[in-house]
Image 1 (cartoon, helix red, strand yellow):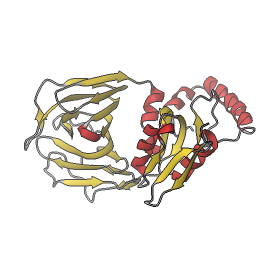
Image 2 (cartoon, rainbow, N blue to C red):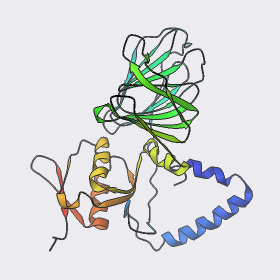
Image 3 (tube, rainbow, N blue to C red):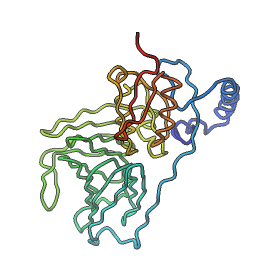
Image 4 (cartoon, helix red, strand yellow):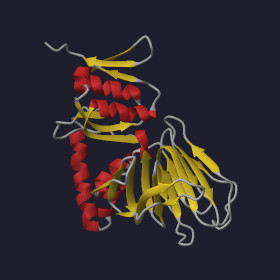
Length: 299
């Protein structure tokens, strides 16, 4: 799982840490040899077994030419289909990674570098340019950063979730006109924080995240989804972003807690794990949905 959690590897920079890690790995491998591992594990299990899955490789899209950001460029749209991910290098050197079913509109001019998140989730790695602010319009919020990295997800009802991994990002209500700009004094969100914003009057809830939580939030970049005891209903909603399959869980199992590492879009793996680890069976209905129900009838 080293590639899934790269920040954890920073602690292995010195020889003493490497010697300790090698011993820990040997012990872990000895334990895995006698454990039947599934992609998912029950959330209540104290020592879940996990299968490492090779990370998905994103599609790299390079523009035909690199232009200085001070030159106006035509509006460009980048998007991904359901289950697809793509990484794009913009004309100023900034890199954006689009998650499943996502779309952005990019327009650079002499005043600013403007991006509009139309749908989905995007991770921005912003090239430094103090003279041309990098602004992202997401719902009715305007996010501004210079030389930083952050993840933005646009949810239903224009709700916005933003996680900052480097630098700082300012957040303000948007004035929707030809030149998007903030309408009030912005709030500042620093690295290691998750900001949740609801549509409407400026309201922002900020919570701190440790490095492991940040890696979990960004696991989609490696083609993986990580759950840690979320209700099955919430898990199915998240998995549904990566597939066209529609799930129909029985009311009696909607709150079953699920934890584990799962390859995005792997419906067969999900159904196998639910049957083997959670006693939840499935069948395809006449309209093509996947019905989920207890494998053992409740007495």
